[in-house]
Structures are given as C-alpha cells and as structure tokens.
Image (tube, rainbow, N blue to C red; front, side):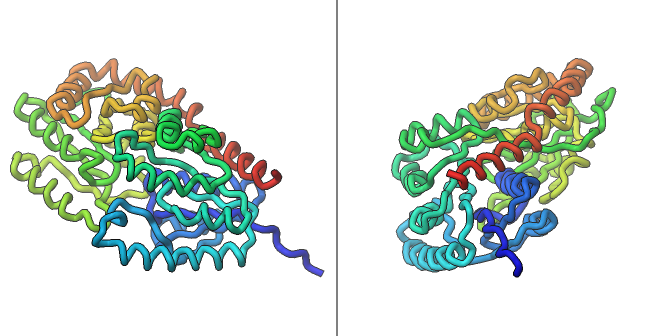
Length: 382
C-alpha cells in the first residue's frame, strides 16, 4: 500500500515576474525544497517566475486571485473589486481544502483574503511583509495591514519594515520576525574598468515615477552640461497600465537631447551581464524602500552604488564604503555624486571590489533559505 504524499507548504504570491519580491518567493520555495518539503505555489498569472519554480520541483497553480491595489479602493472600481474578491475567496477555499497544507505562506500584504482563509481553515499562516510606507495615508495603511492580523506569524525583511509595521498596528509587530532578504550573485564578477572614458550608468528596476528613473535622465543631461561624458542603461519595464510613464520618460530624454545616450534594455531575468558592463549603479527611489535588493546587487557586482537617502536603502548598503547617498528626487545632487565617482574612480572602484566579499557573506541566499525553511517547519510542528 502506497503512503499518502506528505501535505505541502502552500505559497501564494501576487506576481509572476522576477523583480525583488518575486525572487524572494523563489528563494523561499527553494529553501523548503532543499529541506525535503513539498511545495505548491499559487500565482495570479503565468510569467517568467513559473519556469524557475517548476525547475525546483514546485507545483504551480494559477487560480483567480484578488490583489489589493490602491486602485481597488477607488469608488469607481468597487464593483470589480468585489467581484474579484468573491472569485478569489472561493478559489482559495477550494485549494486549501484540496491540499490541506502544512503551512500557508502569504507573500506581500496585497493578498488580504489568504490570511483569513488560513485562519478559517485552521492552517498555520505566515505573511511575508516586503512593503514599508510609513507616510502613506492612515486609511490605506490599515486597509493593507489589518487583514494580516489573521496570520499566526509575520516575516519582515528589515528593521525598517518592522518599525513601519509597529507604527501601523503594534499587535502585528509583536508576532513578526526580521529575516533579511537573501541576494544571490555569480561566483565571480567582472572587475571594474581601470580607466573611465565615458561613464556607464545603470538603473535596474521598475520603470515608474516611484522608482525615479526620470531623475537619472535629468542627471544625465546635467552631466553633459558640465562636460562629463556619460550614458545610461535603463533595465526594467513598466507595470501594466503605466505605459504612459514610459512614453513620458522617452519624451523627456528627447527634450533634454540625451535620447541617444539612453538605452532601454527592458526586463532582464539575468542582470549580471549588464551590470558587468556598467561603471556605477543608481537607485533613485522617491519613496521609502523596505529593502534595497537592487542596491545590494550593485554591491555584489563590485560596482559603486549611488542611492536615495532613505531608511531601507541605508539599512541595506549603508555599511559599505562604495555606497553614496543623495537626497531623493534631486537630479543635481545625483549628477554631482556621479561626477565624484568618475573623478575619484581609482579609489571608488577599489572600495567596490572590497565591499563585494563582505556583502556575499551578509546576504548569502543559502542562509536565507535555511532560516525560512526552519521557520516554516517550526510553525507547522507547533
């Protein structure tokens, strides 16, 4: 007689690409698989993340999923949001009843129904908080965080995120554990160039106003006015519905006469070859970042990083000499920082090479995978 398969861990996630939280979902699944656990992941749509999960031996489901966006709270979208919530709730109940998972892992706070389903179905439930917006309106903050009071435990990706959660709903912070993100990199990376002719600037991330690539375009124009030769690679895409920002960004580059020095690389599942060609990485976010995955990747690529002076980015890379911080949304400050990197290239590149080694140990994905897998198993045993 064949024994029944062991119940899986069910992981639910609102994305399907390979940006920051998507990659952490993948690392979480890997950690459980390395610990010998069955894993099922539910995503709202098919995308690059699916193939990576399946390569790890993870079963992937694509059920109707209600994702709480800020647009969902607008009165004109209420009927559609209610319809999507009902469909998502029914689908989640069916999945949990069928799988009877050991644990339920809710990746990000924009999946408000799953913690409620976990509590209702008596499944130990974990919410992984990747978001930190301490200055958001109180009503928005409560709408995002309150459903996760149904979760038994929380994982938060930084001390800054923990403080944001505590400021929103103290009861949530009392059940939260800080587990920093694991950020992988190649075993070896290309060393920085010995000499700078044209400064090669890279931006990696969402193409959106929040992330600030337009600030880099403005800084690029200022560098040209100051006689500093430079070029910019924009590595990333807009999210669906934000195509107007991408058009405006291209128009802005044309208006500033730098379009010929701005390359739109689109989404890249593997950013390391492009980082190897860059001299410096910029992280010009306008608003708070809970954890600076992209900034860490710059350090791991042995490249100087210039980032906005906001709490999450400082916590991630503030200990490294090759990281510089400037006022958010300040193009002249960013241009001045880029100029200093070019002028002091020998020292900045030396620091970047030295910082990579310590960052590899601090952000080792294997440590993240072991820690999260044990977190899951301990909760399942309890």
